[in-house]
Image (cartoon, rainbow, N blue to C red; front, side, top):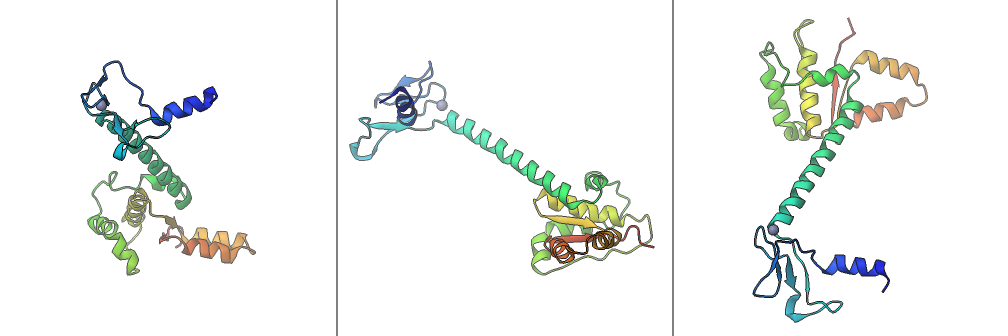
Length: 197
Ligand SMILES: [Zn+2]
């Protein structure tokens, strides 16, 4: 075996010992910190490549791995949320329209929270919301809160308005169908009538 093969072989079959590790009464390597075995014998006395044991995670190693995995999941989640927000908002300011930033002026805000909480049911039964009220009553903010909260749950939302859609449609004669099917592919499409008098 060349050195490279040797290294791979050691990696796969042997457990690196820390200075505080010790050999237990069963002949296996034990972790000096959590006192759990870092090796296990193959079942029924079998051997592999001349070895009777394989590495095993002790509690510290498992905790370290789980912490790394959780951090990795969290990073992937943040990246996905970021991607959805870039794709789904026509204006970056909408990212700030969240329940956390709500000033409490809109008494109906609890309906927005309910909509987010019951999203799976809303989606399954195709329930939408129609918001009406005069300018400045917080309809856009209300809708933005729903959009942000759902995106945080990795639901794809598009928040746009009729004026922007008409502009886009007018600009592209060829790709209208594609544009419309892209709009319809969002599980939630929010049409904010901002800009239409
Ligand atoms: Zn340990």
